[in-house]
Image: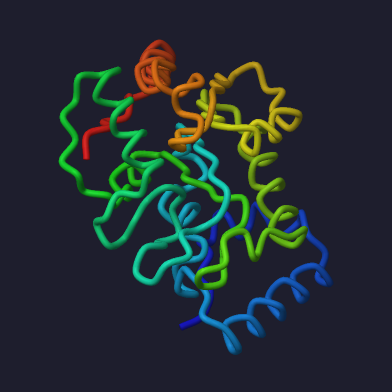
Length: 221
């Protein structure tokens, strides 16, 4: 199975990168997949974009890198393929419940959010098994910065949720007054009580979308 990137995103991104960068990125990925166990599967690398056509973007949530244990990474930040909620996702669900009084089912597949226009974007889109942040490099960071720049330029109301210092590093790229920027501590158990719990980002997001005539997100899983 080869890498899959939807035509609208491919078109938007094609002019942003040199042929040399594209060759370097995919040659490196080919070597990594051929010699190591890499997550997610090749065909799911760009799921965060493939689920959400450019014109349908409503929300952007930025993570760091995919889960590094077999059967978990599905190409969507914080989403977990095998149904076992990781600590940060459990805290996200807790905040949704506290904020919107929604009882979450425990399902950890977040594709239902993506299908409504939520881009769940990791900064690095791949990882080596059992080696967190192992693909955190300039090849991926250049790619995701351009994705965020493209979204920032869109002429539609979009909510950016920036959780933790890593996600907040994207703030300098966000200067479009049409958008809403929400930032807080990361939902990790190490920091959730320092400002993630009680941030009410999910209701604030939906209030903003509704105010601008956009259908809000159904956060129930």
